[in-house]
Length: 454
Ligand code: MG
Image (cartoon, rainbow, N blue to C red; front, side, top):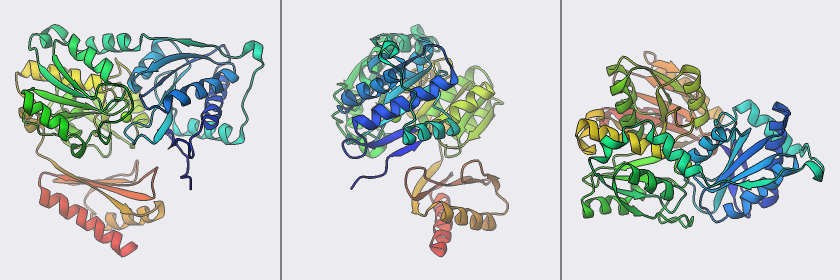
């Protein structure tokens, strides 16, 4: 029984051989190409990259075929990271980009993520247009004399590294000769991650650095999946451990004591460095920790909260000229590198912060932290989620509400964010305060409303 093929603002995602087959990928490529041609009538090119999943070897040519069939030239970047594609779209002045990745999902999944010429995923209304062309199969096919051609480009790592090195002080970091463990889960980030850390003068111990797509552990870079990295850090006496997800847009950090400090700290520590140099605006989604508010406030900066999904954050960053941004899931964005979450940007900023403050990552995490966050999933569809939010408004009349995406309730001592998932019939509830008991109390209150409604 095939699960439904998901097409959202985050791209198309499915299970290979079930609902994601080469012919689907070709049609999706043709649909994307048709949309790009409608926006711009000259001869266009699109760059395409893939993470290390073996199914990408089949899906990338399929998407390329679809693009060529509507007359678009394809530049094949090979196995590269998602942020790498975002950078190359702009570097090569392409009309768009395609990444074949299912990010942190298990190996049986794959997906097709689209980027417009500015490196940002298409907004919801553009996604709707692509969906319509895809399902109606109304492709703007061309005859063989003007079909697209495929070229190859192997410059992504070099361009990416140059852009990241330009935002930090490479020589100062290199003087520290940091001993670093990098776990790339056999995804796309190992090769470029090792090169960047090498450029920053680090002694790099790489684990799971082969781009085989045979994931060495469950790929989401969260504490329960990073046991081997934590052990390796303490065993060899490294000062920090970094974990990337398979397409290397997310970063998790392990401190020198082998403690996985969690993905929320990747953006927080990067922001701490950026705000130590200048003040400005930071954009992040509604589910991200209050650490970012504290860091921005201490520098007189401003936080812009957006709906969940990277494209929403990236758009807000561009619109507001943000000096940093990202998501609490370990996604750090610096627009000077590219409008895509980037584990390399995160690694470079954290090492720069450690260098300049001469403090360990454990100490830095303690300085910005002190919050306790809890996330739960409730069985509730979109209508039920609305009811939960209405009732919650009744019991928290004094909270500040933000209804950009579900509802975030801000209190003096913490916050709750309630939103229905785009990908599952569940409602996500996230709460954060400075104590485990207080956080649990907020979660319990929402769980009680949920019980009454269901
Ligand atoms: Mg990812």
